[in-house]
Image (spheres, one colour):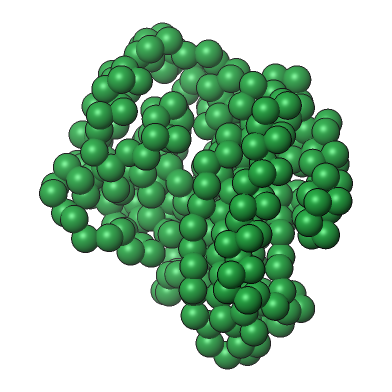
Length: 310
């Protein structure tokens, strides 16, 4: 059966179309995304502002039309931080239902983290030692400590890149003082993560989705590696550190000219790279791998296993 999964994130709306066989195999037919910036201008007031609200409705309808060209037989839609934390999030869900007949399931942070883990498991084998999974969204960031067969701990924090930008209002370029304040904020908010990582010996960070994808694309572009980015990518620490130093001193105009960086991540990539660098240094994590599979692929895993009805 051909199924569509629509993930309504804070920065991007993502569409996955796959031919799914319960307790069998699957084939991904389409994996695409559109920039929406649903949290733009509204996060301080816990509201989706008017223009992003309208943009979100329009983009959802566009993705739905694309999905239906594949003659999909089931459609599964989910929303995360921007919708769940906004006072008018229910209005957004209601408007989508009125216009399309599709019910969007608004995920709490715990369920979102669980789906991210399942997506990573679909992409990566041999997760025998405990690993730390990190998914930086626009509104929230999910952390999962996991081994091969189980989640050991998971939590969602309101530390999305777009939310941080609206909260800290950085200059262009970011100043050392602003970088210091940001790291102090991470230290304070992430105390629960710090406590858990003292229990487990984690030496590998699995980074999901947009920011990690952009960092990998930028490193590949720097090396003149023109092959498409696959579902996994192992970072070289020297490459990441070099790119990090370049990003934190860059202006918006300079980032727009950087090969491999998509336009809609020009404003968030600096905060994301500081966040990643902080977590790796704070917890002495040696290895970093990108996983192209995350939330929507976790939903796909549940469709394959029959936990979600097609």
